[in-house]
Every structure is written in C-alpha cells, then in structure tokens.
Length: 113
Length: 115
Image 1 (cartoon, rainbow over the protein chains, first blue to last red):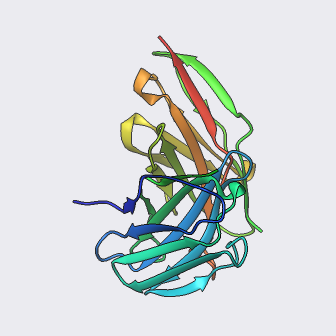
Image 2 (image 1 turned 60 degrees about the vertical axis):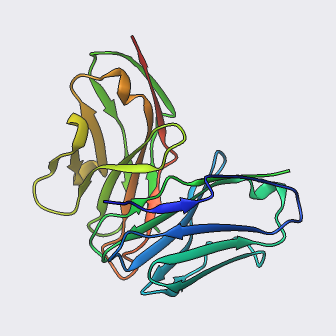
Image 3 (image 1 turned 180 degrees about the vertical axis):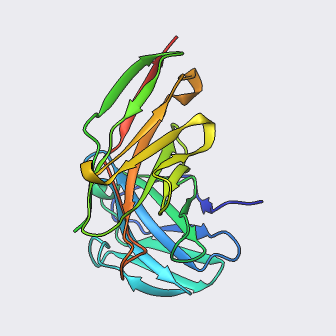
C-alpha cells in the first residue's frame, strides 16, 4: 500500500532558480497539506487543499511561493525565484476526512545556494 | 489560538530504561492530540492519537500516552526503550472546531538512546 509520494527527495539549486516540488497523496484521500520544517521555526503548515481546492494558504510565506492541485492525485509547490532562506525540508501530507490522521510523505530536502 | 509546548529539547536514556516525553497544549475546547516520530531523513510517522474516550491510548512500537485535561498534558511513555527508538518526537494538537484541518506541532524532542 503506497504512502504519500514526494519528489524529488533532494534538491540543490542556486538562488534565483525556480524549484518545483511534487506530491502524490494516498489514493482516496481528499485533503492535502504542504508543510515546511526548519530548525528555527519547526513544522509550519503552508497550504491546505480539500477536494483539490485551496482552503487555507495563510502559511505561504510570500508571493514567490505557489501551490496547485490540478487533480486528486497530484500537487505541486513552486518557489520562484528561490532564495537561500527557503532551504528547508518540505513535507506533503494527506488525509481522508476531517477526523482522520494526516499521513506524511518522506519530504523533499531543499538547499538553495 | 492553539499551541503545543514540548519542554525538553533533547533527552538521553539508556537502552532498557523507561521513557516519558512531555507535551503541554493550549486549546479552548476538547483537542485532538497526536504523537508523531521522525527518524533521521524520514517523514513523520504516527505513533498514536487521542480523539475522545479512554484517556490512556496505546500506540505502535509499545508507546502509550495519557491525556490529562486538568494539566493540559499528553505525555508519551514507553516502559523499556530500544536503541531503534532514537528519533525525534513531535506532539501535535488539532482543532475539533471549524478549522479542524489544522495541526499545530511542538518543536520536538530529540531522543538519544545509549547502549
């Protein structure tokens, strides 16, 4: 039974470049979350989708960040242009409904030089 | 606003010793409470959760946690720690209200296990 799938697992890029992170939620789950984990701030919710619709993007740091969910089995988080302070581990999580557990993917470790 | 405090940043125990990781939450209504574990380079795995009912909940890998409303706590315990338990542990609180998608995580407790 496949869990949440994220790609790439590691990404190294230079400042100013565009970065796209990808997520495939667990089949049948209708909620998807993007989190960012840093030493300083811990785990922060960036954006929450329900039935492919963005419900809460209040955690998105600034306009350089954007997220899409074109269908129930795929989501992207894009950073354009990237900056060194965006270096972090980005997690995707999915959930089946409001009372259920969020299941996390393995994360994408992003380093912006 | 909901919040979670994990007072211990780093704990070291010997293999076979008992373990208790502390978690205090702030939330106005009945919270949903979770413990997750993160091994190095891995995602977060759910250990256990509390939604309602029995305040002592059992999880995977021999862990348990007790919800104490009077103390706003949800401490994680294990009677005998194994070397493979070395990881970072996160407590989280979820809302039972309108914003029931939102999980607020503590900063985590790093567990080191000595042989």
